[in-house]
Length: 303
Length: 240
Image (tube, rainbow over all chains, first blue to last red; front, top):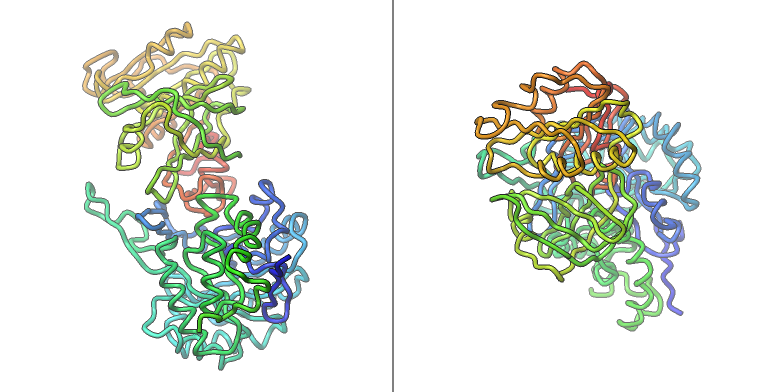
């Protein structure tokens, strides 16, 4: 029997597999397909203070190694999330959930975290300072160490729950960003969010996405994620949640060897709705294949 | 929703760009629902609406518009496809009334065919209007006729049937209508026909089952996902 348990910021999880925010809604779509309690946890849809429709369509484009999205943080707003989404989530998921929050100002991040902090089902906050698809918020906090520190300090003051900061790869040094948020009081970091990209429609000679640019995700990102998790592991001592192009149990192990304590699965859920369940179920046999008895033994093991 | 790997039973060209593919899969379907098909080397699946189905197969008609559908057109019977189905809400045949009107435009005609067969099985004989750009692009007209239905064909260039668009047909009276086709056609139908109805929309999709919010639209009753809450919307909820 192998041991798949990991502890992320003081909370023990049965396994390190976490569907990533924006690919798993509030869980209940997937609960119709399989028992989502097999997951370590999941990170729910990025939540803002006010309801957001997001960007105009088309919001989706494709490339050989994955997809581009420019959804733009569509969500019903924190009040509706608490009143409508979380009660439905509670019926199908019985573990601490990761609350992904976003904002367009420091005050907005604080408002959302303050409101969600009262919800007992929330185990961790994942603060998204890395959304490339909104203007004047999201990634603009994640590319400037000073702005990132401000968000972290402000959020830190209003919750005792673990605060994980989701970082963007669209920076020169992700290690410097990780150091900045660690110094400001973050309990962990998750990386990487999507990579800013763009595609053109050759017939129309115009961008394919209505938003012009979008975030790239999918298997093509795995090497970038491995490299960045590796660098951040060398730079900080807080736990790392690794993500980017993960679609197999092997990918989970690779990111953990690079330094991740837990691993998120994003785009894979969209092309195979059972992807995260398959990863959970194949993790033990994959561990055996590579002679791993205890998953925590391999965190950062490649260093 | 289920995920099946099923054999291609038939794959042949109907026109220069539209192909008929029959897949060996058994599934309870509603007219207007769709499949999401995985293709080798393509990351996202291709959503294609269902034309017809029986106990052991599902038929789709697809237009070759890019590299993915071009790849599909080169597949031979016996090869297999990985498919998610059934997806989407589909049409509601219960609303038809006694004299419904079915309107299809181009590759919007296939889902209308499944609906026609469903209505005929209930003893309702809808009138059918099918619109195309030109005579060589006409699909399914004879299939509708073989159900015993009156079919009016329109062509934009006047090469067959009524010259013009589906909304140029003189008699558009009905108890209820169902329409599927390009958005300008849907708009024209929406504006011209007074009766209530349902319209099936198209959008670029990520997942096809409601997870990614890639295909959202605004309606009078809140935001909806074309893939999960649609692709069929009631006339009364549409915001153009």
